Length: 121
Length: 230
Image (cartoon, rainbow over all chains, first blue to last red; front, side, top):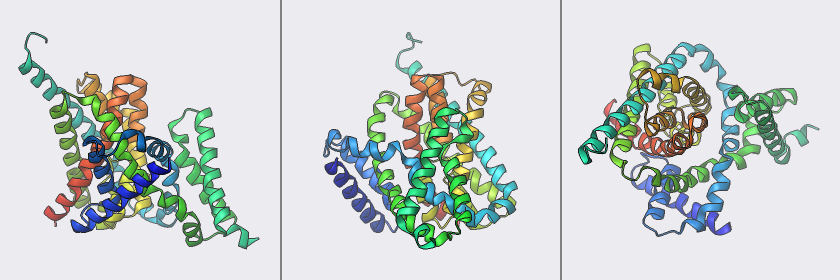
């Protein structure tokens, strides 16, 4: 488990370094996530070295953003005075993303599998 | 007594206890609105005002828990690695679909915000709205948004997507299990996945993968659009 946390911190640090190198375009933690994924895919890190620590962190992730959400206590005025925009954005964009992803995947998948072996379909 | 209430151990107890209470309530009553996050938020805000603990003291006391948000985002890289197997042979349709979803998600947020004329800070807070909350908070902080607003909106979108998602997909004649799971995970992250699992194992697994993919793709796209649109 300690080894796993070590790896996760290592990739967090590497992620912060990459983030600095690319002019802070992407947060360090997200860079770390991509780097960890690549390291596992390229077999530089064995999955069993990180699995326990990673699962411990991801399983209860909601807990870690509880403190950040409490900030709403201070910002509720923004929520109240902009509720029309917030509601519109939430509803419209959520619908759009569902439709675009669903329709695109289904159509491309059908097209590609038809190309590969028309008999199967 | 106030010295006790403002101490780090007490604040950690407050956060952990409220979250645990939320988890218990969620187990008993399977209502999406009783999500541990929402229950914990309500409990903590009530207790903070009741015990007269100010927000800065709370932040200092709970910084240990907030810190773990970063490592948990890194740990998502492992979850992504575990799930990527699911799309072997379907890489092109899946990645294209999530990519398209990422673009539409960000562009629609920016377009609506511009049309309705709101603060840049609000636009920045909303951009990552289809992404799992820990990544969304990091992205929001990063582009000078309001992390707590992001958390709540992202949660709301997840709730909405999980509830209406399957019906919307039916109406658009999206029938394949992969496409349905992918759409739910991309638009409604963990809450969409919870719904996808109810639809079936394939939908659930693909939806879990979609959370990670959408997270990565949105993180890469936001800086692109921020430079393009400014």
